[in-house]
Length: 561
Image 1: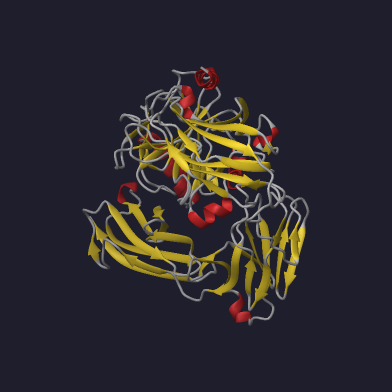
Image 2: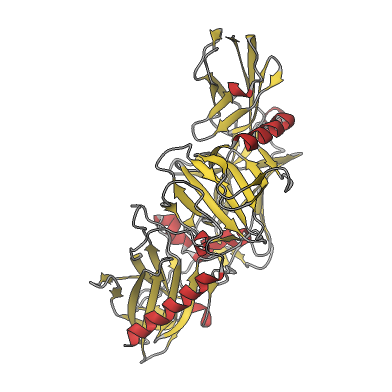
């Protein structure tokens, strides 16, 4: 009876919270059944997913419809991120967002291209007035694609409130078939201070997890003492998709009383990077597995509901407790993990290894580290917690700890390059050394006299690198001197081996033409339907510049009639 009451109480709480939003206002923006490649709040690299990734049957070009009446309030076209994105503001105050688009409806496309040609830029951000591009519910606004940071064809769809906070679109009645319980992959226990222990250890413990016939789970019995917390690896799956998604809600209970909750209903973009404090970041960087911590330590995330003691359990000697984790998806399919805890104070057989260095970082204070020609500036609240940092400089290589400590804001790295020859200074940049082979990856670098500076949120190994090579440019679908009368597109491939592409400019007969850049396959594409290129002889020219100023020029002649 007690377990039934427990389920009814928490199910009622979640269900009631879902019914405070209009349920029939927003429609599915696609004409195909709603199947998800990713759901709201899903754990991603350095951020929570801010919308629904709707599958487009593994293809591009599906019609994207306005989810409700409104007007196009923003258009952003970028090489990365959402790629081609459309924002529609609605009379009820919400805004819907449509990302990774292939192209727009003819009226919107014409409006955008006019602005692109006026600005002579593929990347634009436009803010039309309410009267410029009104739309009706169900009207065509775009076609689905794979632009920007998309890893495959799909539509990214968001609903935001008046404060631009993304909200779970399923709160508004968008329906996904889901009768499948979330899956729990692993459960961990943490001793949260030097006096605490879990199974005689002061280090993180992975608990043996046993699935039950009911679909729930139990773990091995735990002996613990002091302040402890738990973490969970868990995912969900909908009925019509084989891929794993994030869960909707996690609640924890101690002896029947709720003490913590994680609710993926809404968050702000400003707090999204706090995901790295929410997960066990060091564990993730070592294994690529995301443990969601079910206790809060120095984390302002609004999705965390620390009902009692920030989710931390204070276990006393000679006590017994039952700890439950309830994981649910939006349709209230749930999985419950039960952990029996026996309070036992004993000697710690496996203490947490102590690490000390000469450099102790106090999270709420500014810190400057300097050695040789390198200095690093940390500002107050760059980090969430105090820690000892590894810092060393040898031969222009900076060792700045390992990327196992989450950061809250950017810090700056400065290199004094006055000892370099003037001819070499212009080709230098700051690079983060990544991977097993320590490949130099360009970190956006500014130069002020003899000082190079980069702003970053990532610890790790950095070094000065030099790029003296020009970008490469090659024609993909045409040759110099070719007739292109029946061609729809003109395509070239551009690349840069070291610092990366900074900008490009293409012209035909000295007139700027719009070439769309797709960084995933490094191609530039011009559409002859833009009607900029005339008949007869056409002189094509493109100049590509990398991030340290090396430039390459490609020229060709083609003919049309």
